[in-house]
Length: 346
Image 1: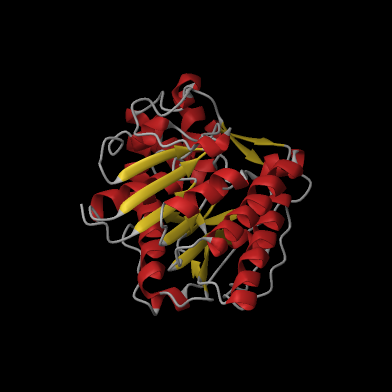
Image 2: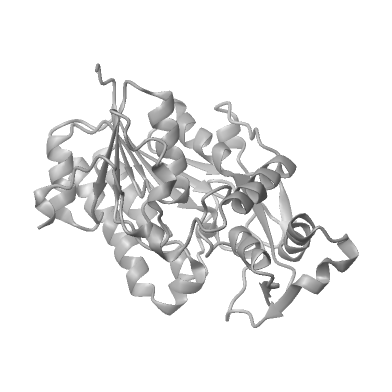
């Protein structure tokens, strides 16, 4: 096989990462795709069952914070491109255990950058996948890439800190970094800690959707395949040293989201949807919305291809067809996957 590129995806067994890995493996048979993932509770081996026997895919179970393992990968695999998605992302959990978020999101990025920069093989792109939450909330003004970062929760703070590390390698070494900041991504295989699969799971258990507080929270939602398209586009057309917002124009209030899902899952009229929504105590600070502008990415040719109606219908059907996908026993390991766990992990 003539390998045109070797691509390392960190967090490739997670929600967005697994969609990215599958897209790369299926669309680029001449590329070698490496997936480095520690397989925590938010990952499922089932996410990559369709490609685990493909000759251009290799799974490496390991921690991005492990410098011996990460340096071993870069010293032996001739990596051309890095998509760095490995991160802890749940806002509520970040308040409860901020140190674990700092370790993975900041220290893991530092380890990866150092190994990639010191590797004997010259890297073509280091793409860091960040979040719109680094901007902080806004009542009206939409953020562009020049807006200041004002994170308002520990998760967002660690992502902002990691961005600063990534940018320092560009400023100091002209290391070929690109940063993306995405709005809320949704779709099949997302873990139930996130709002859409959480609502769907509760409804499938005949429980009410729980909404934190009564303030008018809303979010912009982007279907996962559109996010993957954006990452692949910045690989080919994005300028090194630049940051690109990846956001959908569609925005919906969380209470309206709950109502729509109730109608779809429970097949009840909209006037009765409120009976399936319960308001629970909110966390100390609630961010009402994170509006961003993606004009810069659109100038590269990116457009969303999946509208909300199509994306949410597809997502609801997937969760209805896979009610036990996130059962406790599915995250025990990559059964049958081609494994390349380096001895440097010992």
